[in-house]
Length: 235
Length: 226
Image (cartoon, rainbow over all chains, first blue to last red):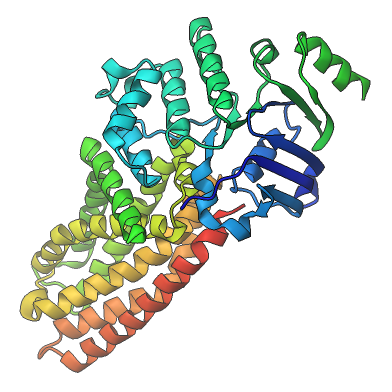
């Protein structure tokens, strides 16, 4: 049975690459329903933090727990509750949209794959392009498909790195609505983005990182851009 | 069971991609055939091939084309960072390694089906006097070579110098496999066939395979975690 959790805790989490401190003593608690905006300038350590949350990067020091348990205690099953949409889309361009989704659904050991994939294609607005090779898709179409690939197994923790890249305004709204629904169903969403206008009204909390350190973790309110500017420039 | 299901799933996925383009099979095959053809132009004089050259040329063609196949297979996983997606699945990571290994081995077997008769013909090598021993040598040698190669290719997938580093790392480690393959195949080409020596090298190859595959399965997960 897949391990489940309703909170993720980072305690004094650090990751060093040689002498460079990519992440330094970050402490953060995230709960079901949170949409946490992980904000910060380039090279702030956002991707490394996402990598650690995704279990792909091992912390150098500190503790990372899912529902109070460390990765070693819960085993590989924890990955069945994590969905990742990175800047690279984790799709095989040679395969069709349907083949991609079917492959990842089976890799996750999901049941009723055909129905799941059909629903995912509809959610991505790609029901009529399911048999087309992903290589023939625009960036926006790939992005929508990749998001559904990431949500296919109904993850508890959803990690998104710039999920709005290449999307037009309508698609941005659709994706934002989709993320809100996923959070309302009890997922924890961590969203690393530079697009503060899109983040405004979507994220419920704002965690700002710079030079690997967490500058603040506050409830997001309207006018994130202003809030962010004040926070980053004042420190 | 889940372990083998995942391995087969990865293998099937690699086949599905390869069937769309035949990119890796065609380049690997072309490289192996070119390699054998160049050696034949260099060494075969007046229709006479040098004694004992065939075994070495066969294994050079397999090793070199294998390196090409390894690099290309993981280049696919680099594009779109799909290797990360595989590692993120709640599946045993060694099963992902095994799936990739089976794909490489199958690809090399397909290459060998063309290259072995070609070497036999061009170098007048009596490869097929003991077909079962030849299959055992090729099978075990290919698995041993691909086992290490798959691990290194996966490790190097994010390295900028992966094309250079793969052969530099791979060839020294797989020298025992290549030596065993060449010596075992030479024993098959001797007149009369030196069966005990061939069996000795088959035994050694089995030992190398067990060691290399076990070590690779064991180290894949920690090596793939940054």
